[in-house]
Length: 370
Ligand SMILES: C[S@@+](CC[C@H](N)C(=O)[O-])C[C@H]1O[C@@H](n2cnc3c(N)ncnc32)[C@H](O)[C@@H]1O
Image (cartoon, rainbow, N blue to C red; front, top):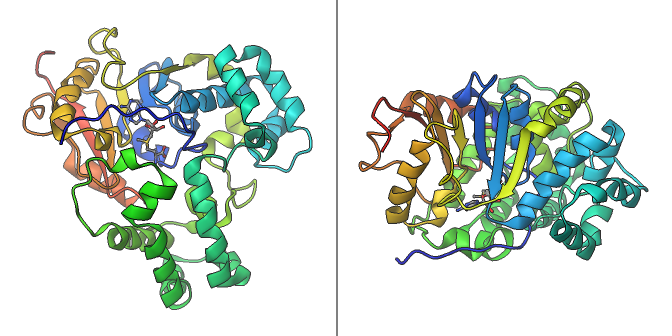
C-alpha cells in the first residue's frame, strides 16, 4: 500500500490515553536528561517533568494537539490549582472564560484564533472535548443504561483482587455489556466515529480487536486496582473518580513541582518523519512515540526508525505502542534498537490504559550511529 501523507487538524485527544508509568519506567532515571514525546493530549509530557528531566520536547503533527498541550503547560504555569482543575473540567466552574483570558496573552495568534473559534471546548471544561473522548462519551451513555448507576458506582468500591474478579465475572460482564463493547470497540466504528480513517490505513486485516480488547479490559478491571486507575474512571465516568484519585501530574503536590519546571517543556508542531533532523546524535535519553508507526507503512517505518535511533544515545530507550497494527523495529533496524522483550511484557501487564495490544521498549545498542 502506498504511503499516505496524513494531516489531521481535528482535535482528537484532550487527554493522553496512554499510561505514562510505562514510559517512565523505560526511561528511568530521567533526572537531568532530555526526553522527546508525541504530544497528544499533553498529560504525559507534563507527567515526565515530575522525574526531573532537563528538557522535554513534545511534538505532534496535528497543530490542535500542540495547542492543547501548550494550553495545559500554560495553565500549570499561570493558574493556581483550582484554576487548572476548573479549566480542564476536573471541577465545576462558572469562570472558564476568565481563566482562558489569563492564558490568552501567552498563546500564539493561530492557537488563540483556533481556541476562540471553538468556545464550547473551554466552556465545557477541556477534558472530554476531543473526538475520541466524545465517542467514548456516547459509549458511556449506553453503558449507564445497560449497567445502571448502582453497578457503575460499585465498580469503584474498594476490593481485593479476588473480589474484583468475582465482581467482573458475575456482575459487570453480562451479555449486554459484551454486546455493547463489541458494538463500540470494533475497527469500523472506531475509524468512523472515534479516531479517524487515517488510523486504519494500514490495517492488517486481523479481526480479533474487540476480543483482545475485551481480554485486556478484564485484566485491567481485575488485576489492577480500579480505584487507582484514572483511565477506567475516564472511560466509565467521564471524569476522575474524585480529587483523591487524580492522575499523578494533577495532584496538588505535583502541580507545585510542575510549576517550577514547565519552562523545561517545549511544545512544537512536527512530524516524526522529520522532526529530529536538526537534532544532534544522541540528543534524547528517551523517545516516546505512541503508536505513530501504525499510520505508516512497514517500509516507511523501517525508513524512519533509524532516524529516531540516531538521536538516542547508547542505553537510551524508545517506546512504541500498537493498537491495531503490529508495528515495531524490524530486522533492518534491530542492530540499532534492541527489543526488551521481558520488560515490554512486564510493562504491558501493568498498563492501566489497557487499549493497546502491545507496548514495546527498545534500547539503543552499542552500534555506531548511522
Ligand atoms: C498516534 S496518536 C495515539 C493516541 C493515543 N491513544 C493517546 O492516548 O494519545 C498520538 C498522537 O500522535 C500524533 N501523531 C500521529 N502520527 C504522527 C506523526 N507522524 N508525527 C507526529 N505526530 C503524530 C497524533 O496527532 C496524536 O496526537
